[in-house]
Length: 125
Image (cartoon, rainbow, N blue to C red; front, side):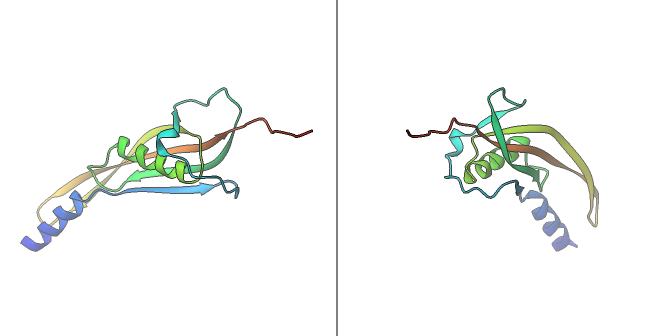
């Protein structure tokens, strides 16, 4: 019984952020620095194109929305995104049964769109 409790506790303490990126186009863009990715709560006025959606979630009770946002920014930068448009935060509750207790676990989820700003094309001539 002691071993089962220790394993359950260890599983609860391990934080892991998961982010699923769904590309909407296959254009290869240069990787950005995460520091250069702007985060919006509303759609910006500047013309832009949505290149991907990201669904991020915390896998432990210790993961925060800030942790999820940071992971999403890194993933947006990897695919060349200029910015993220964040969706609403949501929490899904689940219960973990251990030999001695029933533990409520809240899993945080966040969605976002990855965008690139439309730049005027340069035409020589």
